[in-house]
Image (cartoon, rainbow, N blue to C red; front, top):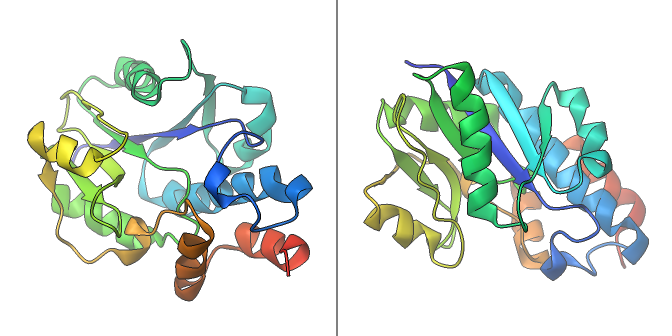
Length: 207
């Protein structure tokens, strides 16, 4: 299997996850956004070769370097798909034959074995993993040496399928459990969130 390199896009923590505001004290909201990303990266790191974090504010997420990730600035005006294409170009320059992936930064319950299972099932194809609602996308993988072709946004699962990507069917509930709302967060907690998210919630959760 070709080596896998991941791009993880992340908004500046004070701007990200607007629909999740109110889950913790307002001053702690950026900490929660960073914690979601930290647990995602901690789980993903053992399953792939490289992780490149693309963000508009590298300084605001510098603490995430502890997970042995690379951080680069986001070009342009903050377009998600543009940021992913930029990240793919940077990673592809290091290995033209690798598999490039885009992983969302809000998977605090992610289990490394589930990500590894998805990478194995991909088997050299351009594939995607739909979120638990079936409309969004949590993971998109290129074929070895192929274009990533990101189409994130509303209805991205359908858009990726229409672009030729294959939907993975393997049971990977924690890989599908992205967190955009308090209800999503409660669902992730049932699986068991990672230490950083759990820590912020235990200290700063709104009663």
